[in-house]
Each structure stands twice: as C-alpha cells, then as structure tokens.
Length: 382
Image (cartoon, rainbow, N blue to C red):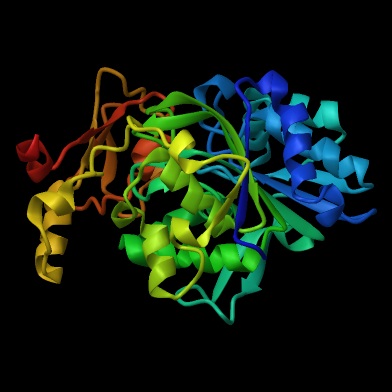
C-alpha cells in the first residue's frame, strides 16, 4: 500500500467514465486491482434512497464507470451497501432505483446485491472491534473497492473512504455500534478496525458533486467540487479530502485516532499528491456542521482534558423535531441507539437528557424534520 493520492478534474458526471479511466491508468491500470474471473465488491456509499443530485450517495455514473473497468479486465462487479434503515429487499430495491444504481448495473453489466444474510468476522488485530457481523458480499467477494463520497458529517465532521466501511454493518445493527462507541475517538477506532479488515484494493472518491453543511443525509447541501480522487489507501484519501475541504485535523476524529495508533498517513506531509497541487485544490469557504469550529483552539488556547470535554459538550448540537415537517414515519425512532425518541400524535419527540449526540436521527430523516439546535457555547462564540 502506498501513500499516493491521485486527483483529476471532473466538472460533470458526463465526463466520469473518461476521467476515471484516465485516473486509474495513471495508477498503473485496472489490471493492478483485478484479475480475470474475480468477483469484486463495489462498496458504494448508499446511505439512503436519495436522488443522485442530492449528493447523499455515490453517483451512479462513478459506480458504472468503475464497474465497466472491472468488466474490461474480466472481473465481475457486484454493487452493494447496507443503508441506515432496515436491511430488506424492498428497501434495497427502492435504494437502487432512486439512487440510479439499477441503470448503473444495466449499463455496466454489474450485479446488484440482494443477499440479506450476514457473516460473523473476527478482527484479531482490532483495537476496539474484535468481532462483528457484516453483509455477506463483503466476505464472499475476492476483493473490495471503496467507492466513497466527499461529504460532511454531523457526528464525525466528514465522511470519506474510512467511514464508508461502516456500511458493511447490516441495517439497524449499526444502532448498537453507536450505543457502544458513543465517544468520537472510540467510534473512529472502530472505523479504523473495520477499514483495516476490509482492506480495499482501490478507493475512489466521488467529489464531483460533494456535500457541505449538515451532512451526510438529506439535510446537507450539495457543493460543486469537480474532482475525482483515487488511492489504494483509505486513510491517505481521507487526509487529502480533509485538506481540500479545509477541515482542521483537530476536528477530524479518524485522523486523530490514526495518529494515536501510529498509523500513516495521518498528515498531509505524509501523502504524495499526484495530478494537482493542494494550494489549487483547497476550498476556502467549505461549510461544516455547526459543531465544527475552525478557530476554537485559537480562541481558547491550550485546554486541559477536563476543559476540552466540557467545551465539546457545550459546543454539541441537540436534535430537535420540526413538527410542521415530521410525517411520523418512525425512521428516527428506530435508528436511535439511546431510545431517546418516542412517537406521540404521529410526531417524533426527542428527550434531550437521553440523547447521546450520534445524530443518526438527523442523518436518516428523509423529510429534513430533525433540526440541530446549536450548543450554548457555539451560540455565544458567534
């Protein structure tokens, strides 16, 4: 595994096939990653049944282009992910249809996964995760490609190549992981363990139409970035993506956890960027979730561990239901690991004292009915 990240401009998805072909060619060609007859899992980010223009999921043009390159090498591509809600065949069909994956499969000859079974895996090298249930295609494939999306994330600040592997956990089983890994650092360690197990051969990030603001779901805002990125290292790809977005490393739990564990790369100076210069790629006005403060450390100066925890608690956002928008579907209630959400009069209600600030409700609500009330300190600073 190298610490190289390759980048190429792609202003429109109509250019995705041509630009991805050039990007992979620059890495040595798809023959580096696929052998004839192999079954390759294309692990896209398919968080929810959202239209491609919403920038919630990996765009079908990117998935289709990669699948065709796999087929050209004699491999068989399988498109799969487990969304945040129930892992069911009707749910997958709606996910694939609404997100354009049906068309992507038809265009490229790829297979859409409908296997709802899971497999137990062991992670003897895991720091916090020693065993887990994952979707069956992740175990039965010959190799995995990580087709992630550049997005902000209300809990982890950003979601990219490393966090994309959380979709290997089936359906609402993810809820238990949020309950048992409430601390961002511990959650990041879990993601690193899962990503190390997955060991993707190739990582491709869709940053043509990215997401900013209160991502990663329907409450986020699409942001034209016009890039495709690739690497054989999920961590390296996330380092570069964070730099492009302008996310302070102090606000990036995955990179902080990697640094604590002595993993490389965790800093931009440990990555070789091929195809562009960071000073030309960095976006100065990228918008992050409300809890992310680019100037928080400069404002307070060095903090003791106690004061750092207190500051983060006072900066935290709290979910609040917008009753005029809520349709009472119950998705947020089923996704809440702390059971802090109840239904009354066909409307969701949040008990703030029970909330663990994982933001699963906000992430998965298709109606944008979950607002995030900013913490007291965040409001005072503004």
